[in-house]
Image (cartoon, rainbow, N blue to C red):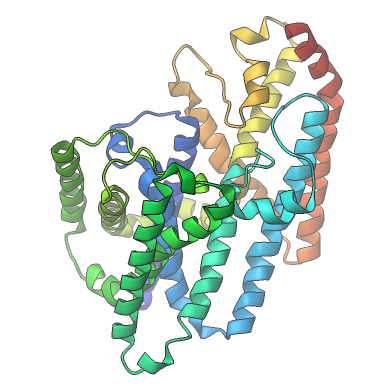
Length: 410
């Protein structure tokens, strides 16, 4: 059993790493793939992360007391996320001052403490961080829900089945509401998104408790990869559904034509990923790469977007110090100012933009790897503050030259 759990940990790291690479690619569209067209990232990927979190929750969360668990999550998840949000608020303010960007709102109580739980679009440079705040809420709710039904304590399987059915009904109801334009508002975003995603968290708990051990005994999981892939293709062909997206930050599902699309796509994609990880488990157990990146994957959610933004600034700084050719021919400052996901093509085609995937994935991991060498929280916090100050200093140093370029272009 110890070997199985160890292997499963590596499988989880593999699925998280592959999922994060998919998130980055979906944000920047560096690689248009057939797999993406079949398993649309926006339809299932974030739900899959929630599913994996439910799996981990079932393993260790309920071993802690109710209040100690809440304090642990505040210390390890909520407070760091709020700190990062504040840092990006300061960085955004300075970048707006020097006309590097035109998006972003002012620092306020709402933009720092409330907006992150909604769309998290107030600062632009850390949009993907909405997931961290959403996950925090779901885990706190789950910690309460799984302790309440003591009346079924002698029949835990029945309790879990009831909770799974109720959470699915809530998820479907939330999904049906967010397909209607007049229900899509910031006031309802958090409520609908939590209702929709909680089911996938409960499904992760259910999988860990009743399915995982049986799944691990399956000797040919590669067959599952093949079957789920073919099933998804056949259903897509039979229903002829178009590009289908449920945009979770804003709970926008207006483009989805069939009610079963997000749930069916999640199911086939999740089984495909689980089977793929299980098939590769003998290799993953000896992977030095997973051991290196695993403890710092969470920083990819925090910083992958700003990593690309900062790389764009570095490219522009090279231009300022070099030939000063027409920047519009390779770097468009106007588009960069307006779009937080901007990345310019390195050549006439988009394939070299895979460099952005590598940078957005590795830069946060390398920084986190360095900072986490210290076991003292105050030292790590001080290192992050110094890093933010260095970024602000570099933005200020080149800010005046950038302002002149923007004014000349206008």
